[in-house]
Length: 108
Image (cartoon, rainbow, N blue to C red; front, side, top):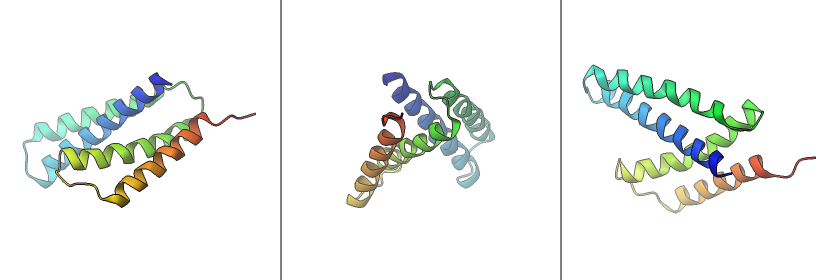
């Protein structure tokens, strides 16, 4: 379970970080190397989930979506300095519950 969580966190940081660098390049006129670096990080993001032990691509990516939402809320808070409100936290908690159910529910 720890490896699953670490891989989701790494994928999330790669997706958000890579996307953020592309955002800075295109939206805030940062140098081209921001975009190139962001693009390379996004390629790495695409590879990280393949190391998950779960056999179903769809289930892994669906569960990752919930983790991504939580990481995006935290990124907005720490990097963009936008404090999440009660509804952000409640939504993130619902996503975390959904991820847990999807991945670790007993299946027959």
